[in-house]
Length: 502
Image (cartoon, rainbow, N blue to C red):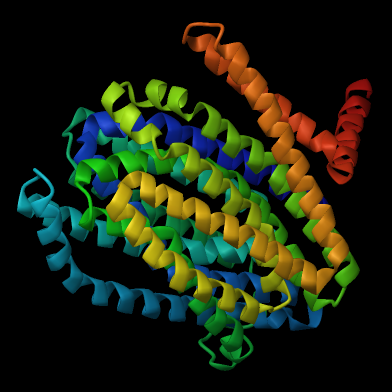
């Protein structure tokens, strides 16, 4: 449990650091690359999520299997062969997907050329560099998943922060001083991504016990085929629902409007950044407890993970929803762009916070291999909300896309909450729902009061200091509102006090 706590703390600091960098880098990227270059960068991020299907499927299965083996010392000898098998399978699958995607470049750049002022050849090179960057960056996810399964969350999170800093920082510096060119930007991504993948691979194999020479084995995959197949369909449908707006909007709206939507999305996605290390830290723990059939402790861990996620994510998402316009104006330093990007921001922020709040619930279902209910929910969501997204986007532009995301997120969160409660006990439903409601109402009350106070002052740096203080206060009050988190906070403060006295 101590390593889990350290991993969560380092993971949270890593995610907050990357979120801060994203917040700092985005207006600079907008200035250096222009709104159309920034839109291409947003399309690259969406492609990363689409091809990340491979990463989610294999990495989730690998993390779970390694975590289960960790509970069975007699099975440690399987680790080298398991990792080598997944390595080869990952590379073959990724190579096939990239090969299939290459012909699509021709059709994509033709469409982008119609809605962009960038030269046609320049767009084609940019899309090719996107594919190359994905090819060298994505495999690192497999080794990050392995380190998480090996209970090395702190090391994995720390290195992720380091390479995220290098990737964004080097790309900006090079394009700023040499040429303000999106293609040069992607070249820097390729170099840092290659270094990241090689470093994570070396570390992973360093921690794998050397009981035998690793080799590819089909038998290593037989125990995972059902889980991997279910996760495949869940991930594909989840990708359609979460990423189609970013991919479809360039074919519906102008590239400038897409840039405004992606700016709003970049600010709203901070909730996901906060929730990710919590899920990564608890995912292996969930799987270990499910493998040991210790469901009493598993229920407690689901409650802890969900309450921690609610306490951090809900105040963050609502703060962006309440004060997104102020953040956007100070962020991009362009009144027109800030005004346009602020329109969908509240809906995106609330929707993203709800999706992030559902992460522990989803991984609780994964841990016990309850894939069928998730498959049914995702299938229903695709049938209902995909047409809704297309209709609302065509009718109301980026506001319609944001509204469809909000409706989808509300439905998904409460459905997963009901599913988890039906499996692990009704008492869990009321405990989690009560904490969710209390955290939400508390956040709305404090933020509304802060909004009234800020209305008494002219817009200045004081606004952001008060908003930051309000968010910290909300996090603290959210911890106090939960008995479990309150005890954790008390023990942490007591430990600090004893250490200081020593």
